[in-house]
Structures are given as C-alpha cells and as structure tokens.
Amino acid sequence: MKQDNIRLGVNIDHVATLRNARGTFYPDPLEAAKIVMESGADGITAHLREDRRHINDDDIKNLKTKQKLPLNLEMAVTVEMQKIAIETLPNAVCLVPEKREERTTEGGLKVKENLDNLKSFIFPLKSAGIRISLFIEPDMMQIKAAKEVGADIVELHTGHFCDLFEKSMVKEYTNYLKKLEDASKYASYLGLEVHAGHGLTVNSVKHLRELHQIRELNIGHSIISDSIFIGLGSAVKRMKKMINGDR
Ligand code: PXP
Image 1: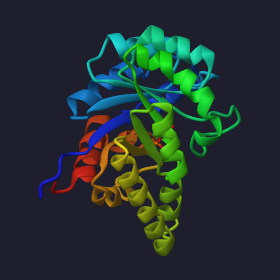
Image 2: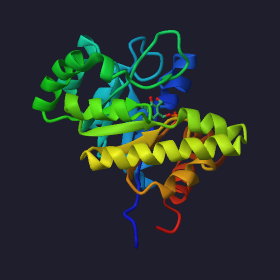
Image 3: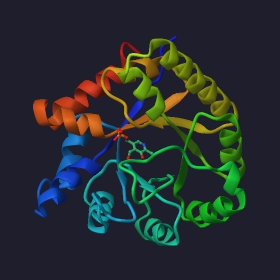
Image 4: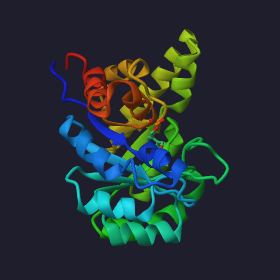
C-alpha cells in the first residue's frame, strides 16, 4: 500500500550558530528558511535556547511573520518561553529538556515525573491554539504520560539510534529501531501524532522510512553541514528524497 510522505521539518539553528560565531548579520536564518521552503521542506524548526547561543528572539519573530512554512518552536519548560510562545503563536511548540552546559539536547523530557507541572504549563499554550509536541525517549511510560498531559504530538528522540548507527553497531541499532517502531505504534494507537528527530543523516534516516506511523522528521545539523558542500537547496532536496524513498 502506498504510504503518505513523511514531512521534513528543517532545523535552521546552526545557520544562526555560524552567524553568531562572528557577530555578523549573515548568514540569516530567515534567508535559509526561504531556500528551505523553495526546496520542498514542509516546516521550519528552531530552538530558542535560554542562553540564545544560536537562534535569538528576533529570528523567532521573523520566522513567524516573514516566511510561510509552519514554525515548530523548540523550547524549554520555563515561564519566559511560555510567554514568548503565546506572543509569537508558532504552529507548534516542541518542549525539550535543556541544560546550559550541554552541546545539544541530551535525552528526552521527563513527562511521567512532571505530570502536574506539564499539564499546567501546556494548558495556556493549547488554549492559544498552539499544537503541543513533547520530545521524549521511545519509552512506553513517557508516551502514556504525554497523552495524559494533553500533548498532540510526541517527537521520539533518535539520538541514541544515530550514535549506534554511526558506530556501525548493527545489532544494537537494529534493536533500537525496533524500540522506536514499538513506541511509534503505541503513540499512534493512543491518538498521538508521531514525529522523530535528532542526529539524523542521509544515511541513518533511510531506516526510519519503515516506521509507518512517523509523520514528520526534524533534521538540522546534518542538513546544514551538507549545505557547506552541496548548497542548502540541494541538501534539503536530497534529504527529502532519502526520507521517503519510493513511498
Ligand atoms: N528535534 C529536537 C527536539 C531537537 O532538539 C533537535 C536539535 O535541536 C533536532 C530535532 C534536530 O537535531 P539535529 O540537529 O541533530 O538534526
């Protein structure tokens, strides 16, 4: 049976990382978002971190008002971010755990351990019409808790799978893929939309095609890295082709 295409959300944080490395005004994440759209991506993802190490508040405003793709705002569970989200009204918010000293998002959100806090955090965001995604490990208890707190989407953390894949640990990554598959099926059974992301490359992403419940992949670092050699438009087109194969 022909499957629906998996949507590609491109995370453009690292365009801002490059800009901020020199304190210049270029390269501009908004310009990147426009190329990403012209190249067939389905959404823009950006992480407004507490320390603003890459994307900043103006970027978020521009990405919401000056380009047309749906914006998925990744953010920590803080009062400051909640206020920004309600002012900006992105299409979706993806709640992630955040530690200042980490290089990138390590691990998934502990939903089961913070049920009440998350429920009250999510309520005003949902009331403002924002879809809620929770970035979690492929763990059944966390998925069940995501449903309980009112999430619309779970984004399954693929970082561990990608580490095993990059180290060519075939047995281990195959087992982990099964874990991602079981998690996707369970989340979908509960009525949650399933997304996935973190660490994916044109090589590792092929394996996720077989997980039929996945509706969207959010990919950043490898696309922006590939764009140095082949250009952003080509990197997006190539990734889009890889995630869907002959669907
Ligand atoms: N999804 C989430 C929730 C993330 O935090 C990140 C990294 O910001 C990504 C996807 C994209 O990961 P990567 O840049 O490794 O492709």
